[in-house]
Amino acid sequence: AAGCRLAAPGVAPSLLSLEYLRVASEGEWEAYKYLGVAVSKLASVYVDSVFPRLQSLPAGVCEEAMLVMMGQLPQLCREDSRFWDRLSHVEFVRTAKGKLARPWELYDPSVAELHDLLEGGELYPSEAFLRPEYVATLVRLGLQTSLDRTGIQLVARTIAA
Image (cartoon, rainbow, N blue to C red):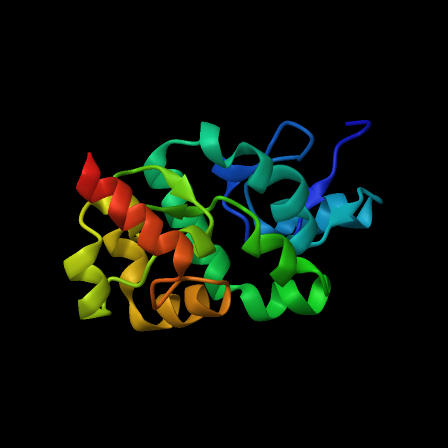
């Protein structure tokens, strides 16, 4: 298996690209590791293999993977000090309309004033991302909780259309 690597534990096999070995058990993973197969850190797997392929993954697989990843953020940020910054620039949040967006492109639907002004699901995270722990993380990544100049222009264009 020249050129193949092992992914760190914690990555669903469905997310692995062809450069990763698929293993059936922890024992098999340990055997490959013992034989000298390189192991990629979890952060590297996401940055190098998962993030570039998010658009091509089935919607359910993508969304579930990103929710799992959000639960792994403490470990990912320990492994890669730039992970948080990288993540803020990735279109990984599924919107209520089904497209992927960066956190800072979206608005917090729990802010009533925004909800009244910004109609349409393309501006909000999907239901799966609305659990309080996810919203708190998304706000730290730039999820908007108020309208800035760009947001006001967006509302005006929406009304005009």
